[in-house]
Length: 247
Ligand code: IPE
Ligand code: IPE
Ligand code: MG
Image (cartoon, rainbow, N blue to C red; front, side):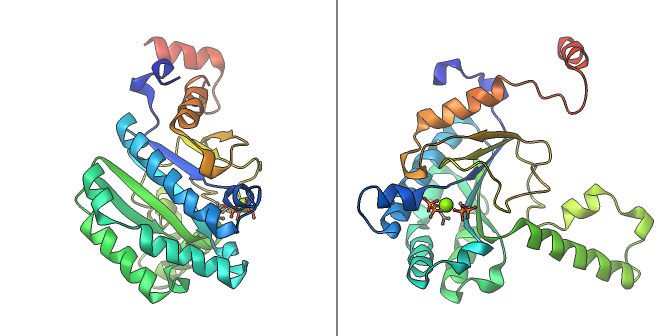
């Protein structure tokens, strides 16, 4: 499959909803946390493969604000995993910069400290940026940006008539990255679950049944191949897009 990929048209930003850890574990008669642990191995595998392919941003949905409602032991296990799996060495070896997006106020201090340290230590790495969406909610991100804009208008720092899409982009947690060209969801559900609603306005969507711990390099190649097989029209006609491509 990898041989079929057009290396000149690798998406620069891939976003993934890593779903299916719990079901993967249950099918093996294990605790859900065992699935999350296996999910970390998949993160390592897919991150390395993305750097090899030349992807520039990889955004991983790791924990949603809605996930705070899960049983306390599962939440604790997940936070523990975040702490133990953030190894500087792996980021340095792969020249990967680490960033977090989400509502940091709800994350425990010890975890926040580790996140900040990893962001700082890896800030100069430039092969790829791995963005972890943690305690993330797209609606909360948009609400926060809206409040900020309202405040700036109230204080006379911003003119209502000058507000553009860019004004909003700049106030989102994701303001340092381009929109994803490709969004992948593993685990069989066909929904977005409050992820990057604004940013995926024109992303290509790819859903697969594979549980996240089983997601292999080959599955990533399949998703990218599917992306490359589609014509992105951005509202234009097929003929218009073809004419532009010939130029
Ligand atoms: C995704 O796997 C990881 C998180 C939401 C933290 P799930 O834990 O949702 O796995 P399933 O969907 O229950 O199988
Ligand atoms: C979405 O998965 C969030 C993450 C993958 C972190 P969920 O398993 O929480 O989504 P729903 O509840 O099935 O929509
Ligand atoms: Mg799930």
